[in-house]
Length: 123
Picture 1: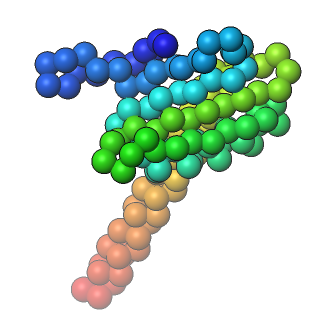
Picture 2: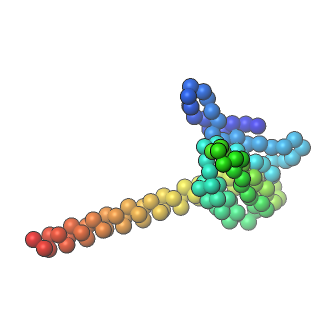
Picture 3: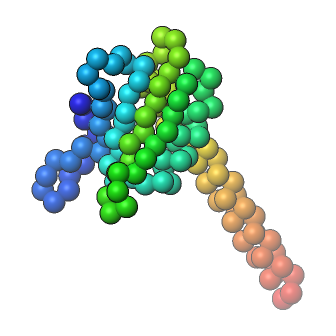
Protein backbone atom coordinates (compact mmCIF):
# COMPACT_ATOMS: atom_id res chain seq x y z
CA UNK A 1 0.00 0.00 0.00
CA UNK A 2 1.44 3.39 -0.93
CA UNK A 3 0.19 6.91 -0.28
CA UNK A 4 0.39 9.41 -3.10
CA UNK A 5 -1.02 12.76 -1.99
CA UNK A 6 -1.25 13.98 1.57
CA UNK A 7 -3.08 16.75 3.36
CA UNK A 8 -3.09 18.04 6.92
CA UNK A 9 -6.19 17.30 9.00
CA UNK A 10 -6.42 18.01 12.71
CA UNK A 11 -2.65 18.03 13.09
CA UNK A 12 -2.25 14.58 11.50
CA UNK A 13 -0.81 13.66 8.14
CA UNK A 14 -3.66 12.00 6.24
CA UNK A 15 -3.31 10.17 2.92
CA UNK A 16 -5.76 11.38 0.27
CA UNK A 17 -5.01 8.57 -2.19
CA UNK A 18 -3.80 5.02 -1.65
CA UNK A 19 -2.91 2.37 -4.19
CA UNK A 20 -3.77 -1.14 -2.96
CA UNK A 21 -2.57 -4.30 -4.66
CA UNK A 22 -3.48 -7.75 -3.37
CA UNK A 23 -0.60 -10.14 -2.78
CA UNK A 24 0.17 -12.18 -5.86
CA UNK A 25 -1.47 -9.76 -8.32
CA UNK A 26 0.31 -7.76 -10.97
CA UNK A 27 0.20 -4.04 -11.75
CA UNK A 28 -2.67 -4.54 -14.22
CA UNK A 29 -5.28 -4.94 -11.47
CA UNK A 30 -5.18 -2.24 -8.78
CA UNK A 31 -7.60 -0.69 -6.30
CA UNK A 32 -7.24 3.02 -5.63
CA UNK A 33 -8.66 4.29 -2.33
CA UNK A 34 -9.70 7.94 -2.58
CA UNK A 35 -10.34 9.56 0.80
CA UNK A 36 -12.77 12.47 1.23
CA UNK A 37 -14.54 11.62 -2.05
CA UNK A 38 -17.96 10.24 -2.97
CA UNK A 39 -20.18 9.26 -5.92
CA UNK A 40 -19.61 12.61 -7.65
CA UNK A 41 -15.99 11.83 -8.44
CA UNK A 42 -16.38 8.04 -8.42
CA UNK A 43 -18.96 7.79 -11.19
CA UNK A 44 -17.41 10.55 -13.33
CA UNK A 45 -13.94 9.06 -13.09
CA UNK A 46 -15.23 5.52 -13.77
CA UNK A 47 -16.93 6.80 -16.94
CA UNK A 48 -13.77 8.55 -18.19
CA UNK A 49 -11.57 5.53 -17.47
CA UNK A 50 -13.94 3.10 -19.20
CA UNK A 51 -13.63 5.10 -22.44
CA UNK A 52 -10.10 3.68 -22.73
CA UNK A 53 -10.26 0.49 -24.88
CA UNK A 54 -7.32 -1.01 -22.94
CA UNK A 55 -9.38 -1.03 -19.72
CA UNK A 56 -11.14 -4.34 -19.15
CA UNK A 57 -12.90 -3.36 -15.92
CA UNK A 58 -13.39 -0.23 -13.85
CA UNK A 59 -15.81 0.06 -10.96
CA UNK A 60 -16.09 1.83 -7.66
CA UNK A 61 -17.79 1.38 -4.32
CA UNK A 62 -18.32 3.57 -1.31
CA UNK A 63 -17.15 1.87 1.83
CA UNK A 64 -20.04 3.06 4.03
CA UNK A 65 -22.55 5.94 3.82
CA UNK A 66 -21.00 7.59 6.87
CA UNK A 67 -17.47 7.48 5.39
CA UNK A 68 -16.21 9.81 2.67
CA UNK A 69 -14.11 7.22 0.90
CA UNK A 70 -14.37 5.31 -2.37
CA UNK A 71 -12.56 2.25 -3.69
CA UNK A 72 -11.92 2.48 -7.43
CA UNK A 73 -10.75 -0.76 -9.05
CA UNK A 74 -9.12 -0.84 -12.48
CA UNK A 75 -8.15 -3.91 -14.50
CA UNK A 76 -6.38 -3.50 -17.83
CA UNK A 77 -5.69 -5.69 -20.85
CA UNK A 78 -2.24 -6.32 -22.22
CA UNK A 79 0.83 -4.59 -20.88
CA UNK A 80 -0.80 -1.37 -19.70
CA UNK A 81 -0.39 -0.82 -15.94
CA UNK A 82 -3.59 0.27 -14.15
CA UNK A 83 -2.07 3.52 -12.94
CA UNK A 84 -1.87 4.91 -16.49
CA UNK A 85 -5.62 4.88 -17.27
CA UNK A 86 -6.20 6.25 -13.74
CA UNK A 87 -3.94 9.24 -14.42
CA UNK A 88 -5.37 9.73 -17.92
CA UNK A 89 -8.93 9.55 -16.55
CA UNK A 90 -8.15 12.26 -13.99
CA UNK A 91 -6.57 14.46 -16.67
CA UNK A 92 -9.48 13.96 -19.08
CA UNK A 93 -12.01 14.69 -16.33
CA UNK A 94 -10.18 17.89 -15.38
CA UNK A 95 -10.20 18.95 -19.05
CA UNK A 96 -13.96 18.34 -19.33
CA UNK A 97 -14.61 20.28 -16.12
CA UNK A 98 -12.46 23.18 -17.34
CA UNK A 99 -14.34 23.25 -20.66
CA UNK A 100 -17.71 23.36 -18.85
CA UNK A 101 -16.45 26.13 -16.55
CA UNK A 102 -15.16 28.17 -19.52
CA UNK A 103 -18.49 27.84 -21.36
CA UNK A 104 -20.43 28.74 -18.21
CA UNK A 105 -18.34 31.86 -17.56
CA UNK A 106 -18.64 32.93 -21.22
CA UNK A 107 -22.44 32.55 -21.05
CA UNK A 108 -22.60 34.60 -17.84
CA UNK A 109 -20.52 37.36 -19.46
CA UNK A 110 -22.70 37.30 -22.58
CA UNK A 111 -25.87 37.52 -20.46
CA UNK A 112 -24.52 40.46 -18.45
CA UNK A 113 -23.40 42.25 -21.62
CA UNK A 114 -26.85 41.79 -23.20
CA UNK A 115 -28.57 42.98 -20.03
CA UNK A 116 -26.32 46.04 -19.85
CA UNK A 117 -26.99 46.93 -23.51
CA UNK A 118 -30.76 46.62 -22.95
CA UNK A 119 -30.58 48.88 -19.93
CA UNK A 120 -28.63 51.50 -21.92
CA UNK A 121 -31.24 51.39 -24.71
CA UNK A 122 -34.10 52.17 -22.28
CA UNK A 123 -32.49 55.37 -20.96
